Image 1 (cartoon, rainbow, N blue to C red):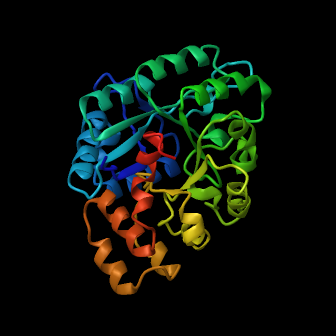
Image 2 (image 1 turned 90 degrees about the vertical axis):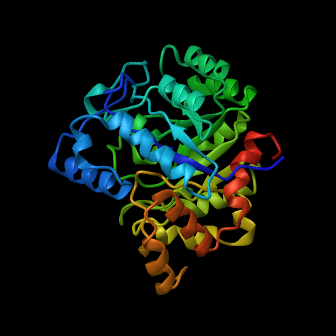
Length: 325
């Protein structure tokens, strides 16, 4: 069986203009500036901040996948933050993408792979998980420091065990975070994932637990040491071309570590060639040439290739999905 080249970390964002149920909030000048930068770098007009984002975002993303060396992209749903009692923390929620929306898009387009997002403190968490399992979903995305999830909470163990039973992969944010509000930065420590792993869940640690900001904790070495203990633990290289995360590249390019690395872009986070160049992973000539590529998913693919990631990085997720690892 030919394995697909998959971008395993693609955010879906919408405004609900197509009836998707998506929404996002741009409250401050900083939020608005960041949103405009992301849209521009993703190839979308800033006018979509007002209306029409649902359709244009999906059309643009589909075009990028179809005209790249990739075969598919994992679309990420986004749940709301909750407290431990199962109450929504709407005040500081910044965006929402329903599970059903990504499921419907994946049914319509074979290039899309759905990833659900379910806060385990939800009163209907197991019911929603079973619904997604019945719909064929194999990946769940959680951003614990934003969603307010302590993976070590024993009340969540039945949820993790059901995921393991159904072979649902957990794609979990690890490391620093600067694009959304952080409730508790310690929840992004990869060591917090140990109870999930011990329940039998296959886990992908997004961003390889590296820093985002200058003063963030850097847990990459902790993550790499966990590889020895947990054979079902992986990491992705999403956003590692950005200037603020490129410092993590040096930790994940050795051949022994690459066996645990999965390709991801973190679209629509800007994909630029300067991070790998400043980290001395590509030449200035490569930097200039790759930066000209207008398809940002292809640009990320070319950058990861040039920086030294092996071809197996791009197909490893499909191998996991096929239960070959």
